[in-house]
Length: 352
Length: 131
Image (cartoon, rainbow over all chains, first blue to last red; front, side):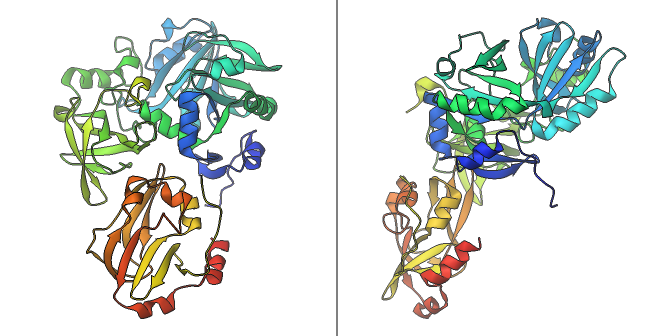
């Protein structure tokens, strides 16, 4: 498996900063620069920047583009006007999740889908195979670089006005043209900047010059878990459904889309398992794959730097999924206590 | 603050990136600069119990960073007579001072001759260079 790893347009900058690089979804990506904990703190208290150029961008265009996407994505696309975005799921016939993504309505008949790096090909092929006459699906990932600038001071540091979440506009940062999206994966204020691949490294430099702390995938995973955003491949997969995962809010069950019948059944009958957030009540760090006593499994786990304790997401039997329920997690042969909590696990006012 | 890379001459090393400071029939054990740097900032230390018997080349505890967990391998066999509570409470002590305040356990050696099989600093540096 000596396959060559792909590199983003920012790769040389990561090397120059001394980042620790790791293989991720076929890409060589920075997992950390100075350290995960201080990178998490930077995003929670000020501003951090992540190179997320490994993520895929698909463009869907044409008079029947809305029809194609309304029939394949779970959320209600009709609610989107040009300049707006929404979180949505690409579902299979079993109601499983092929990918979770953000769809941006660029124009009346032109959409941009930002998909997970690991699912770029699967999502593209799924949509391409279902193309209608008058709906063109293209993988435009290689044309762009994508930087996520996140934190309470992110917009201020970039000199950008505030704007409602899940909106976007054309803009520029120090003369570099980009699409400014009020989206992110950290639970903080901030934006994601989509720019031409050739301008990516220059944009990165400008964002750093404005005081953003470079952050790697380690911090990104910890930040998203603190606010209970699911990670595809861990918490949601083609074998898990949106209802069990607590994602019914982004599924419009009274429209027709792939797998909707199955989701209606699960909703009507009630899911057998539910994805729940939990915190450790003892000193221990839960990890993906650990079993939860009584028939459950940890799907994501980490140490929360903000709460200074182990946190995670996992599936448990629906009958034992209420907030406050005690869990016992098998941490490499030792039983450790945890408790189901409300989402999000971390909120600023509760931090120590 | 993270420590700078070093491998003190007075210590003995195990190629799984552990060190021993031998004093008569006792030894203090810990993980090397290389080990803590590979893991990143430590956030958890799962120690053995005082009184446990630990065996050379076997795991006697675990250390974890935000992203990773690693077994700690015993360079020597013996009985645990003290666990470093400071590291249990503040695991980042290992990053700051891996050979001093960041020690992990003190043991009473069951076979002091085992030390003859450990590496000196120069030999261990070769192990690190090839890792």
